[in-house]
Image 1 (cartoon, each protein chain N blue to C red):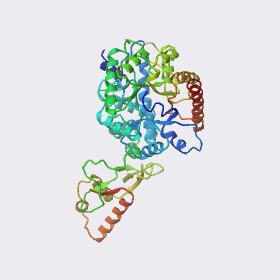
Image 2: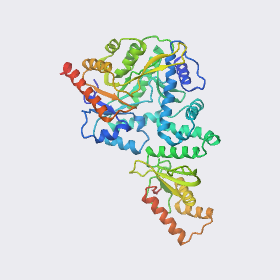
Image 3: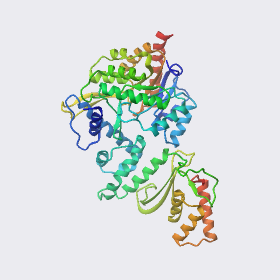
Image 4: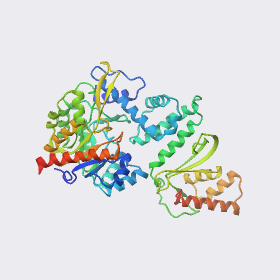
Length: 291
Length: 242
C-alpha cells in the first residue's frame, strides 16, 4: 500500500471556479476530506486560480487529476509540461497523480477530450511505457483512471477489464476507479458492472470517482441513431451508481471518493446534500466491513 | 491499422470538415465530434459573450467548424483555445461585410479581458534579469497582466457600440480579480507600448518618443511625464527596472 492511501480518505469534491466561493465561505459543509484539482488549470496561471488554490491548500489536502496526459498517447509527454506538473505536485505534497486510460491527441493536435483506446496488446505496451516514463519523471505513483467510452475503435483483442488489468500489472500502477464510468460503459456496451468491479484489484485502488451522467441520441452512424449514456459530470448521481459505490467501498475500504461536478451546477445546498448522502454511504459501507 | 493510425482516424473524425462515416458498430465514435465542438462553443460563449451575441445565428458554429478543420488545437491548456480561435477567426471576421463592423474590435477586447483574468502578473524572466527599483537609467519592467489595444469602436463603454478611435490600456492589478480598462491618449499609449517592450532605458525611450512626436522636452513635458509614470507605478502597471 502506498503512503497516502489511508492518510486521505473520505468524501471530496472537485475544486471548480463555479463553486469555489460557496465552498470557501459556507458556514457549514458536509465533512470534506479533500479537494481535487486539474493541474492544467493551475500551471502557468495567476489571478483567481492561484488565489483559489492557496485558499484550498490552507484548508484541505489536495489530490491532482490530469486531463491532458492521455496515457495511451503514442508520443511521449511534453517534458516541459511534466516538469511544471512535478513542481506543482511537490508544492501540493500530492501523494500520487492520476491520469486517464485514453489518448487526447496525436501529431501535436489536442482534442481536449478523452478518446478511447483499442483494447489490444499493442496498446497495453504503449500505455505501460507511458506510465513508467511518467512515474519516473514525477517521482511518485501514477494512478490510472478507467474512462467512459462510447464505441470501441476497431477490433478488440480483449475486453475492457482485461485491458485495464494488463496495463496495471504491466506498469505496477495504481487504479483510480471511476464507478460512474463503469456503470455508463456497462449500459452502453451491455455487461454486468458488478462482475467488472469484482475483477478490479482492490489492492491497487487508491481513489474512487463518482459523477452524474446523461442520455443522448447519437445520429449519423451507418447503423442509424442510438441512445448512449454520456459521462457529463453535469447531473446528480443516479441511485444505481450509489449502489455500486457502496459495493466497491465495502470491498476496498477507506479511500478518497470524489464527487465530480463540472457543469450545470445545482444550487450549492443541493450539492451539499449530495456530499452528505455520499458521506453517509461511505460511513455505512466502511463501518460495516472495515470497523 | 496500428495504434497511431487508429488515433489519427479518431482525431480526423473529431475535427475534419467532412469526416468519414464510422463503420457499423463504431457509430458511437461520432459523439466525440459533437462533444469537442460543444465544449469549445461553451468556452467561447463564456469568454466572449458580447462578441458571440453580436454574431448572426449559426455563425459561431460555422466559424468553430472552420477553425477546427484548418487549425486544430495544439495547446494543452483549454483556456488558450479562446485565443487560438480569435487569432484564426479574426481576419475572416474583419473581412466579412455582413457582420457588425465592431465585431473584430469586440473580439480583440474580450480576448484581452479573458487572458488578463488569470494570467501571471509577473513578467517571465526572458531577459535573464532581476527586477530592481525604478530608474531612468535602466530598462523598464511592466506588469505581465497588461494589454494595449487600439480600437475603432467603443467596445469598453456601456451602451451601443459607437465608431471612434480609442487607445485602451487593460490591466489587472495584482490584488484584483478583474482587469480595469483605461482610455489613454495616443502619445501615452505609444509611450506605454515602448515601456512594455522594455528594450531601452527609460531616458532613451522618452527622448525617442519626443523626437517621434515632435515634442520639446521642457518642464511641462517632464511634469506630465512624471505624473504619468507615478500613476503607472502606483497602479502596478510599471513594476520597476532591470
